Length: 402
Image 1 (cartoon, helix red, strand yellow):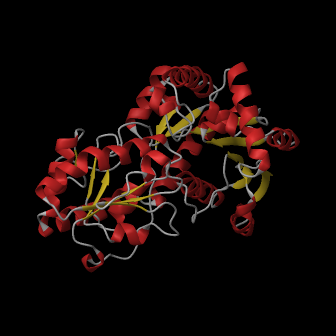
Image 2: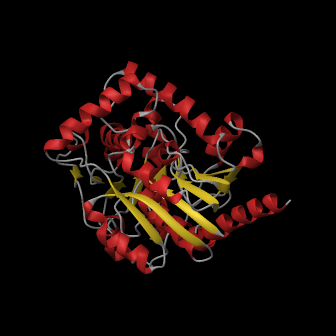
């Protein structure tokens, strides 16, 4: 098939963004079987990733985003704020709006595509070239005021967050109804899309995967070390880090006084940086998260908002690290009741109790970590993710033929 893909960032296997990593796997999977053209928003740091995609045989049309730093950044933020106040689109959508992208898509419209595959709803704002079918990969369904915030400090007032939530509800409804298939990662997100944009067969659930590394030795771990990993441009990670350091860690230390917390992630806001102290390290950006995951006796992901899946949870599981998370953090992950691959609780006391039990038992940590790794190997490979995407394309082709 002749496929046009749209992404709001350059797909890259080595990116710090989970979204860019998953996008890379989507593009890679489709390019293996189809003729793929990619239209993507890019920055000056993306040259190597763009070359890699072109070397892999993709036709890449990279549109440079306006600068987020430097003298022009203040002007850009002012324009975004004005456009938000006078318009009706969510702020995150406006952040990814570039006139040059629409001009690029208009030029590409001279070709008719079998499928236009839009990756991330931010790219659904653009007028698409003609195609026989359209697919949207919906990375995160946004339902609450916290889910709807574009960045940790972008919506300081409750009133602004509520206005943003209303925009998301209208925008998502409009967007989902404009596609033949909407691919999501979790059943919870699927239920929302089915309710808002029937029929039910519009929605496809396709949990993403992760690379399976070499088995990690427990010798890499540091006694009492708890690790949280997450990019802080994503508001749910800010909330999780504050909750973990402020409420959960003291409960753990009451039972395990040697417990320490390491918070790893790019762009921590002041509310996260000030968590640093005698028992908590806030690293900021790191070149690689793997050494931090390997050093953890327990990886903790107490996310309370946001949709989609958490790549860092799967990465920790693949490295045989025991993970404690919430029901929301476990969404999309293979976790059968009879042989749990994660410890799950939704209150501070319950999360702390799981952490303490694991810190006090090397046997419990090892057993949970090995079940987690097996679950990734059997249920969360990129090959399985790709097979389900190919099945979606095949169903669209069959519908078109009928």
